[in-house]
Length: 130
Length: 253
Image 1 (cartoon, rainbow over the protein chains, first blue to last red):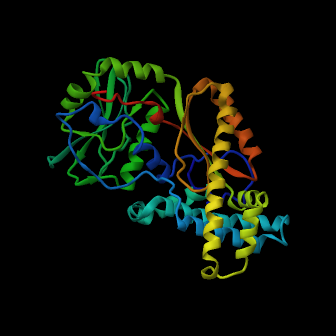
Image 2 (image 1 turned 180 degrees about the horizontal axis):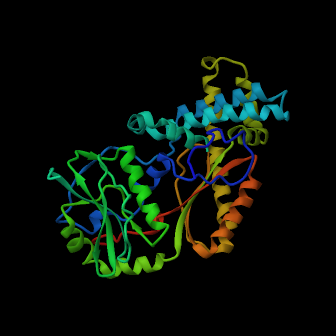
Image 3 (image 1 turned 30 degrees about the vertical axis):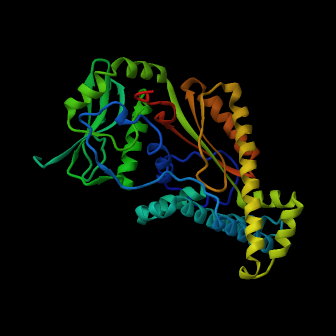
């Protein structure tokens, strides 16, 4: 099974999404924050090695977040009101939403993570849309 | 090959009767060859780490996770948090495996036949915003106040609206998480609630499932995904090593 799939999710449709591999962001949530801690077992032979600074992502309420929500509402209002319910709209809404979500994911990830990921942004983005 | 070496990187602990896939590649650049260091009934999955200054590139992180997840699909595994390095293979036995043999063996026995999954649901922004705002007079008013107006002129209203939305989503998240926990209750799974990692996360939790119950769990989550079709995208990650269900003893407590 390949991990290549349309990042937009093919215009929605329900169903349980079963990604065949975890994106980098999901990996970070798990392996940096969970699991047995070596220091609790090994003292003498521990090799202290620097870890590139990556913080597990957390959600922090901020003015930026609020402004982003407000903008999302504004956009929703313009694109939604008179066309609501048309099947054609579904596609437009879905792609607009993906953009907003991706942006949110990157912001939530923080600058350090963003810097580190660099050219790995694709991973983060496809995760953001999943 | 006589390059200087940083040490031995440890991925996790598993039963001694395993063999590594010769194609398995570890962390580092070039990736280290993965080996098993055994002691009685248990073993550590390791690789030798060449000279490195720091760990944690995207490749490193992915290699750690993929190796353990692949192992966990075959045998029980106690995953270590990323970044465990000791001086040499002797240290793996003398300081890690031998002194804690029984404790690790017991934990592995408990994980036999079980796998961890992570359930994530993310609200579909447009729909959840509509739902929240239409049901709230104050937010509807603020929405009308900013409609079509430049951002600078309506900054205060935007902040007020956004803050209310944030709070409403947090409340909705709590409610929806509880809903999912209750939906899973009949299956009697250990569940670990995780912190949200995105403003629009609806649910984020890990659970441990017996292989025999896997189809039931997937069916339950498939129903949830259908039910929430217009509300949130539901995804299930795994099977993976049981990161959320192995607990380090706290020394001195």
